[in-house]
Image (cartoon, rainbow, N blue to C red):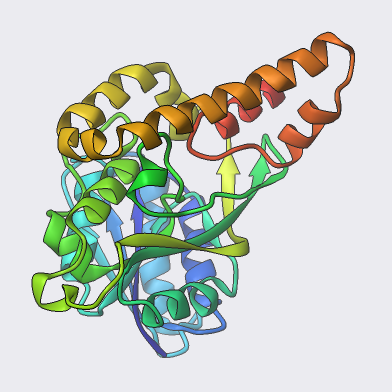
Length: 302
């Protein structure tokens, strides 16, 4: 087993949470512990499914392979509070955060843990997403340092976090209940870096991405990735105001990053106007991440 805890958050997700738990138990490198945090589910089906999962773990109907499976129930407080509650309860140096309607591919821990153990300046790691549901595609986030993240989010919400980096920046912002709380956390971890005693001789804080699909991401018209797009400008104003010093230090990166996104979109539009669908088809196969691309692809397929 690895020194990893998987925190799975759930809110009225019915039978989908079982798929998430089973994906965590099916890892080629097993975690020490799985913590399920229910954020005040009030649909009876969801409550019954969670109860059945715990009974199955206790009585052997669900093979845990020696992995401890614990449950935390809290009054509804949003995804940030649920994640913070689970990470705070984890006793391992690395924590995987997984939404209850998504799934880890079997090698997620095997591929992401070595990135963190080999590089003390890395605050989180993840992989590409294989989407299913409304959209069938492979999405390829890139990770990077603060300069990469100021223009758009470069890491999936499902990721492995260095717990000390999470603790140093104060965790997820529990006031953010409309989306982008993961992007905000990444900016905070990249801005604050590592503990002072660990900083000597270390490189710039950054987030690593294993270049292969490691997450099965469920897409639906009502998913938070899509619905948050209606508030994207307001959320970005909040992020820029909160991380004003970081954005001021990386103003060129932010402007050039947004310009690169705009140029890519214009090139695709010009190709479509000429009747050439090559670029748009490639976009639907590999939508961009963190800049509204994946949400746009979901809307086009809905």
